[in-house]
Amino acid sequence: MRNLLLTIAAAVTALFASAGAPNGYYNGISGLKDAALKNKLYEIVSKHSKNSYNGLFKESFCYTDVRPDGTWWDMYSNIKRYVRSGWRGMNREHSFPKSWWGGDTEVGAYTDLNHLYPSDATANSAKLNYPLGEVSPSGITFDNDLVLVGNPVSGQGGGSKYVFEPADEYKGDFARTYFYMVTCYQNLDWKYEYMAQKGSYPSMQGWAVEMLLKWHRQDPVSDKERNLRRAVRYAYTFLDQRQAFIYRLVDTLIESMGDAYPELKQQPDLIKTVIKEEEDTFLRTLETGIKLLDKVVNEAKADGRKEVSGTEAFVLYDTYGFPLDLTELILKEHGFTVNHKEFDEEMAKQKQRARNAAAIEASDWVELNAGESEFVGYDKFECETSILRYRKVKQKNKEFYQIVLKETPFYAEMGGQVGDTGWLISGDEKIEVFDTKRENNLPIHLKRLAVCLIV
Image (cartoon, rainbow, N blue to C red):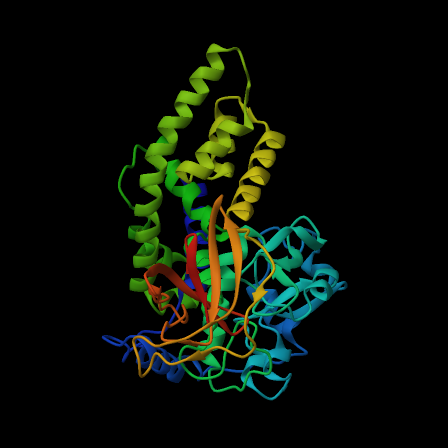
């Protein structure tokens, strides 16, 4: 039981560190949406304290970015560097590149811990000021087995030749960081607009919003969350505890450890809410996962095996959300192991499938007329126009055409708003436009063996 309480203590402090906000901090945002919500959030979050840039490692990172084993929490490489040995070979990394706002060291963004991380110097140098994105498998220029740099898949990059792709387990962290940055610093005049764009709303390119929201929703479980999950699983298996209960121990925890962690006393209700939500979510996963894992173990026993295939472990992870470290823990209790090589191979295949699904094969543009596309949709729902250029595109074994029009009333997907749909009519011919996107500041209209408009 003592081990359980220690695990709970570690989990509570970790969750608090990532979820904390003073009571009343977000007063005033209720009922707001779109630009009004973002502008109100800007008023709130822009009033933050500043840090010393030169003192980041000694005064900040040593509290915010250290793993339980005493190594720096580096999201850019797998190299283990112990805090006690200093930070040789590491950089202070602006995950949201400082060159994007012109590099001014007097603005709050320069020392804002929400986007500053300790980073391996080599990976940091490879990243440069490239935007985030998903790297095309055929265009990789840097790969250290954790992060990638290379050519973006079609539709990403905002005009940059290269993008930086974080590890899957940190993509959600980067996504939330970027949403924070374009909100907290919406007053800045962006020098580079690969992802951010001038103006208070929307302040991010449509392709970037779509990708970052996907990363946020698919954010895998971090190590900071795993301590809590181990405690839930321990209680589920050995104490027959089927309901959320750890959140009820917060008061006892504060009473015994509040002096050592005074921040726990500041908002116990928030801590309880966060923990209970995490418990309830994981209990549903746990019940399904343990039943399936029991079946896998029984089949292995019947076959006389002491090793569970990595394929079976990956199905538990990928299909049912059952963490590998928990699978290994349970199997160890039964005297079994997991074939890590097979698991890693399945993970690599899954990543490749995801990249292939996102990859687009596009032919060269066919130029019909010179000129730039003009959006007239604020005043018109239809107009006479001509085609500037078009190309044939293949994605997921489906073919369609992208078309750029001289004048267009179709609004391109941007800032969370979906692209317009409609029709192109020429004489008796009527072609459906099923989407409108913006690529490199061009509105592109899409059609299935018909049109996708690019604006």
